[in-house]
Length: 280
Image (cartoon, rainbow, N blue to C red; front, side, top):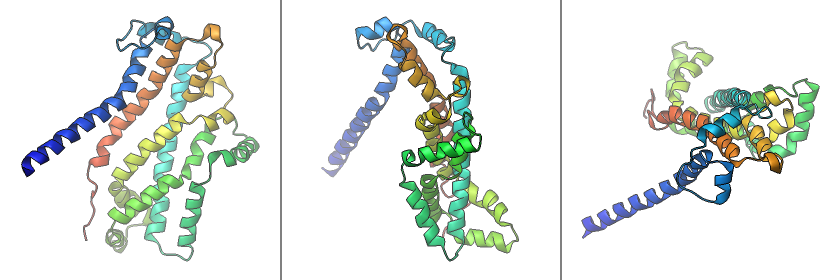
């Protein structure tokens, strides 16, 4: 009886997972299908069958003089890759500093970083824009990359991961062997942190890739705009020039790099949580 009950639960679990998988992938499928249909076909209503306008929509998007897609992809890649690299590396370094060292204001520093985490971006947006203007960085990509050095959410994840997976005995052994602090961090701590870094790199990349608010305030030059701004510009075109096929095609192009990054980094999420670690 218990064996039958266990089999029923397994079957129900698989059915539920299949339903959830279908719901997650269905909208991506519809997005791709609509990118292959013309504006007139999309206006007729829903269709699960791909159309024949994929190449036409792609040509319209790439050759649109008002929407520099190729430069938008390049700008988004530069911003997202730079932001992910800075956020993960310096957040891991900050977390290591608070985890591995005992100093007087360690708790106060942790609380301060957590307070920054709950502050909405919109609150500081005007002051940030004025600061960038005074520094001569308006209409450049630097204001979209450099602030990622301070990423409280990434820091908190790294700190929590270190508490569960980084034994201090390993760090102390490296110090006894004469290893410098930076070398200890780069050669010993970072390899152990690979799964956490991969997870946060994916999240930081996606967040920077989809960021619209700050780039819309900072960037005015068409050639320096990122993809979310270009998508918004395409959707806000006047009625006579509005083409849903182009919109769906541009959105499809925009999600491809995110999928590639996830595929490249996802193997680190489940691989070697205790890489080089010492179990107590």
